[in-house]
Length: 287
Image 1 (cartoon, rainbow, N blue to C red):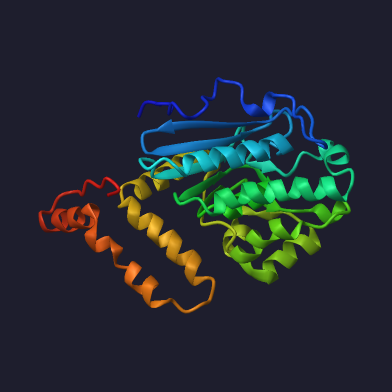
Image 2: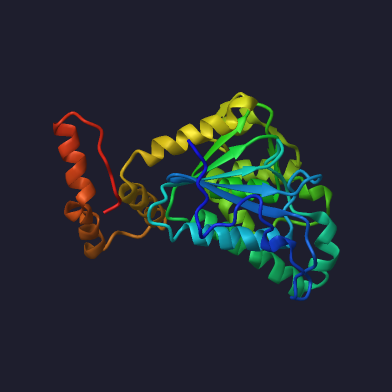
């Protein structure tokens, strides 16, 4: 499949906003980038900070939020893959900027609220998201991966958040996503021991969806995205919406119960039934 960059997305060969000087207090010129490309109905967002195992700086967090927010508006998109460049997913936050970006409580709060906002755009993206994880997936990288719907890991991937060795705790707004995915027992193991989990351990504890050979991570993530893209996009969005709603623990209202059958008026529903009865592949258009 040929690569067709979307006109609204910055191509991988173009400089990103992360390269520009930042004007707000506590931020400075950063070296990382968020790259994005599109191939048909699938977009791939890549964390890139060469020489630092894709450690995520403040500008990258902001650009990630902007990129995911933009992708969420594209009705013809079906899935987003999040990956890291150069054989690593992300080795956490960029510690070199912490003394400046988190110099006092106000700056630290602003910094981590921005991180939380970026994670929220991943977790709340109406499109299905797949993390393709190779190498270290640590700290902020683990937070991004846990915000995705599915996580495909290579056998050599490592997972954790050994920040107890750095003298600071995980910000509650960032901890929430990991806690919601794997529960308190696993989170306590990750944070209190500070050791890195192997990919098989992470799979056994529910951190990742499946484990494949390192060389097959991106191919499996793309195959997963293709399977998602073949389904009715309105159904994928509805499933994400209802799962999130049901996790709130409140009973559904009568209006919500009726809304669950909005699909009856969709062209995709009619197409799905017709394709099944006619024994042919369905052609969904998100309508």
